[in-house]
Image 1 (cartoon, rainbow, N blue to C red):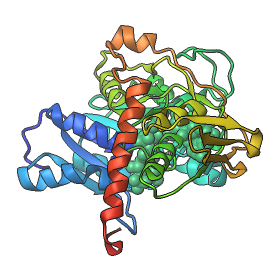
Image 2 (cartoon, rainbow, N blue to C red):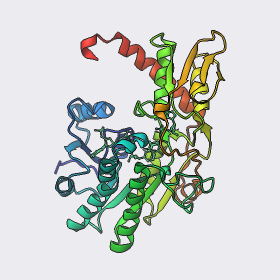
Image 3 (cartoon, rainbow, N blue to C red):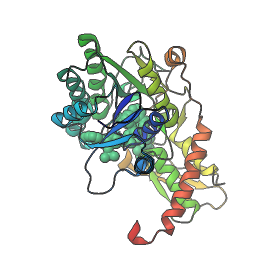
Amino acid sequence: MTGSRATKTALITGITGQDGAYLAQLLLDKGYEVHGVKRRSSSFNTARIDRMIMDARDHGAPIYLHYGDMTDSTNLIRILQETQPSEIYNLAAQSHVQVSFETPEYTANADAIGPLRMLEAIRILGMEDRVRFYQASTSELYGKVVETPQSETTPFYPRSPYGVAKLYGYWICVNYREAYGIYASNGILFNHESPIRGETFVTRKITRAVAEIALDKRKKFWLGNLDAKRDWGHARDYVEGMWRILQHDQPDDFVLATGELYSVRQFVEKSFAEIGVTIEWSGSGVDEVGQCTRTGVAHVGVDARYFRPTEVDLLLGDSTKARNLLGWAPTIGFEALVKEMVAADLVNIAEESRLPMDEK
Ligand code: NDP
Ligand code: GDR
């Protein structure tokens, strides 16, 4: 289709998201021809991959975008037919857990039936023997704590419409592998973050707000459940894991996790420490505040609006299988992750403040 001399061709759904951007760069660096599915939007939605697109224009980097949507079967079939990928990374999803309570039907359409549409497209086009399929499964499948740490053998108990939709995505991937011999694998990834994490996920919400406080753009911000605990890694490590999953000789399902556990409260404390502020907590429930020990200024409040109807209290992964069979291991720990995110947001906020209003 493109005349590129790349040896392998990958199709990434969700290329405009956090993981899509890191994965596209990884695959380009490995010499792949990369095709991405992007949604039509009324405003620009390619900020995370704009540099790669400019490289494509200036230096002929083999990256191509196609308009599409996980809810549109015929469109997905056509994109698959035109691009003939050897590897498909199905990352596209309505990925916000709290939003899934407000848009459960759409979330199911994109996150559950979406993977089914991709797998059926593979069958319809007779590509079963020449394509490898990666499904972006999630630690949200574990949901309510049944055992810790959570591994490939831990029973699932999802706690949100998002988790339930992803449960279907997980099992349809397993089923098409067993029924039709398609090379289809699940990566059960625990939370992974980065400076390009979506701004409404808790880590990025915190690092942006802390940067705004450091630069005197605001005094206070509000969060939900401060006691939720997560196993937070760096997206750069996790897209390497996705790639390794598809290079394995057999299709299989793998947990990717750091094995370290921190609370939202600890993420807040560590982020403030990066700007030289020590936070102490007082009060409880929605009356809890986090204030600066030196100035006494309250910087963090609790807003019940961010509580979820059913919460996932604790996610801690055991990635022994991926470490042993794929040689995968995370390289960026919690401290380095928070440091990188706060530093990047200090730069972002400073730059945003300098922009004239009509460019914002
Ligand atoms: P993001 O929310 O950053 O990106 C989601 C991507 O999916 C965006 O490109 C988005 O497009 C696209 N998308 C959403 N709905 C549709 C649709 N109907 N049709 C086509 N594209 C759509 O998520 P992440 O990069 O963080 O996550 C990638 C995948 O991994 C997701 O499936 C997520 O559920 C899963 N996951 C993520 C984890 C994490 O911690 N980050 C952990 C485990 C799993 P647009 O830019 O237009 O919104
Ligand atoms: P999560 O990530 O739900 O784990 O899903 P998120 O960052 O949204 O929440 C993590 C925990 O923090 C608590 N929390 C808040 N969350 C948000 N978003 N905003 C707040 O103000 C806030 N205050 C406290 C939440 O209640 C929760 O317990 C992410 C997504 O990337 C999914 O797509 C992915 O599958 C999972 O990680 C693994």
